[in-house]
Amino acid sequence: MSEAAVRPEEALYEVDVVVNGVRYVRQVEARTTLADFLREELGLTGTHIGCEQGACGACTVLLDGRSARSCLVYAVQADGADVVTVEGLGALAPRARRVTLDDGREVELHPLQEVFQAHHALQCGYCTPGFLIAAFEFLRDNPRPTEAEVRAALSGNLCRCTGYQNIVDAVLDAARRLAEEGAGPA
Image (cartoon, rainbow, N blue to C red; front, side):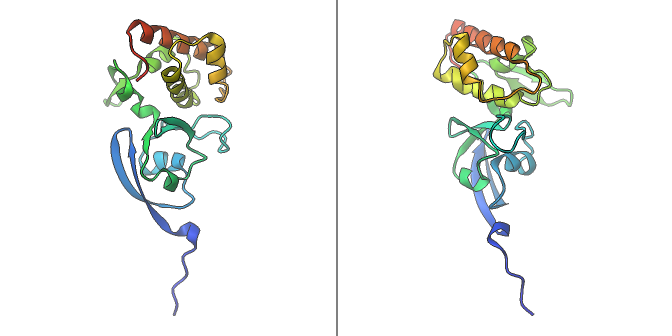
């Protein structure tokens, strides 16, 4: 009796990755996307999966410091990388506010997360993690943007609620607040 052959797409591969400052080593199938790895393997459900084609930006994370659509990256491609999800954004802040969630967990909010809340830029919340990560990278690279620059920078993220004005206002407010504090987003 012979054993069934393992097809390459069913074989498991080791992934060694740092996510939000914590090292994880896991076995994954070659076809596992980074988004699925973060959500299903690590339980970091802040990264949302929208279109699964990289068009909507809901799954945006920082991969070695640059934004990436985690639905377009295989987990095995992230081997050895440093990943930051929306759950880890607060740890990157020069000044983070600690809050207690309804379930009793304490988390740190990045100033961007605070201004999104203050400007009602959260909308339904589905696209919010991708917008926050994109805005973080944008403000890191351009700490004093114009409204047109904010709109252009975030044009790769889609909001199903079409609440773009509140998101733009929040990013501009974050830029002002961070400049007043003399700090960039990280």
